[in-house]
Structures are given as C-alpha cells and as structure tokens.
Amino acid sequence: MNSTLLVLAAGMGSRYGGLKQMDPMGPNGESVLDYSVYDAIRAGFTRVVFIIREDFAELFKQAVGSKFSSKIEVDYVFQKLDDLPAGFSVPDGRNKPWGTIHAVRAARDTISGPFAVINADDFYGADSYLQVVKYFQQSNISCNDISHYGMVGYQLTKTLSEHGNVNRGICSGSDGFLKDVEEVTEISREDDNAIRGNWLNGEKRAISEGAIASMNFWGFTADLFEHLEKHFIEFLKTHGEEMKSECYIPTLIDELIRDGKADCKILETSSSWFGVTYPEDKPYVVANIRKLIEAGDYPSSLQ
Image (cartoon, rainbow, N blue to C red; front, side):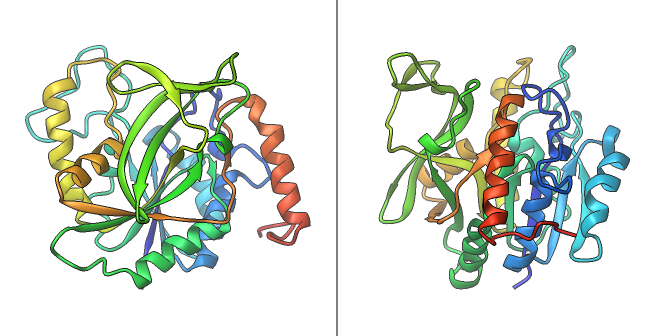
C-alpha cells in the first residue's frame, strides 16, 4: 500500500530559538528529521511531503530534501498565513499561523491516500513508523460508515522537558481506541512533583502520571480533509479575529469521535519519544541517538 509521510516543518521553533529541524544531532550532522525520514523509508512509506514556509524553502530543500530525493518521492507544500477558506481573511496585526490544522490543510490538494502526520522536530523511534504502516495494511480503513484513524501514544511522563513547559494532546482510551483527546498547554512538573497544565477551558489542573500523550503522530485517510475544512471554518467563525488563536488536530479528532464520525485506534509502540523543545534539551537527544547507534538500531551514518 502506498502511503505518505506528511511532515509539519513550517515552524521556526520560537522557544528553541532557530530552525531546529536542521540542527545536527547525529554523529555525522544528522538532524532529528533525517532520522524520521530514514525510519519512514525502511518502514515502507513511499512518499514524503514537507510542509514548509516559502521564505526558507531553498535552504530546507538543500539541507533536508536533497538527502532523500533518490530514496523516496519528495514533495513540498507551503504553509501560508493567508491560505484560508473563502470568506475569511487575516486580521490586521496577526503574523502567527493558525496551528496544526492550518498546517495539515496546506496539503489538501497533494494527498489522496493514507498518510501519517508528524512534527519535524520530534524523534518518534523506528517501531512507531512500523506500527502506523501495519495499521494502514491491516485495518479496514476503506470502510465508508465512519472514518478510521490511528494515533501513536506515548506515556506523558516520558515526553516532558526539564527545561520548560510543553504542549501535549492528553488522551483517554477504551478497548484500544481513543475516547477523547484534549490539547493541554504549558504542561510541566511543578515544585510539589505534580504534573499540571492549562486545559482548553482555561483551567490549570493536575494530570495523571499514567496519562497517554499524543505527540502528533497520526495515521489518517484523505477523507480527513473534508472534516478538517468544516472544523476550521467553524473555528475561524469563533476565534478568527483573535491574534494568537490556534486550531489543533487533537481538538478535531476529539470532536469527530464524540459525534460518531470517526474512531481512532491507539497504536502501541516499543519506541521512546524524545524531542528538542528547548536548546537545553539537545544534549539529551544527542546522547539518546548515540545509544541507539551503539545498540545497532541505526548506522553511524545515514548516507
């Protein structure tokens, strides 16, 4: 089965302070994104589409895309602030994109089959890609009664940063399927050792140690774009004039599940997640990649 990896790589990494998608982490200058595409290729993905910004397109193509163009079909899509549904426009003074829904929407005219979504700056681990491909191959994703999606879940405690707060989709499940997911912002372990974050209703509350987090690694079919468009239009009607409002993938999936329009299988993985939200996270990521190389999970050079 042909499947596409859709990589969200348009962000500058405001908390990190630079283009962390291209920051060297491996022993030969490999970035986290290099390892992601490498894992996708060996798992069986046949195409990768990078969502990027036009202002750094050439740099990105030279630094990242050129490495893989002989190994997998590579395409690029630009995320543009003014790429909005008919009847909507960017409010004066807004320069911030509209979140992960807006980013994925940019690929609506380039994807027609099963596809996975990942963040460019997250290291998901080889087994995660295998689980998504297996889900595409084994699941009845062509069934037309409701939409069928998948999500790779990670233990929240293994996705926190010691150097600042993070945003995560906090999940609950039943019989291997997602029941609901909510985007929670500014999550951190506080002085009393409790994990807390800001929920969408504005309330700051504790989060269970055993909570499952969505790290934005999803398996979708192309019918997502129809659901996404309707959801984004309603979001813009309500929040479109706000300067910093964002529309998140977990919020859409939660809505579809509650409305009986989709189900979402939680895909268990033996892989560990790690990422570089802050500059201080980099040594941890570098050390973990070195351990995986020493264990034989990756070659010393990806070229």
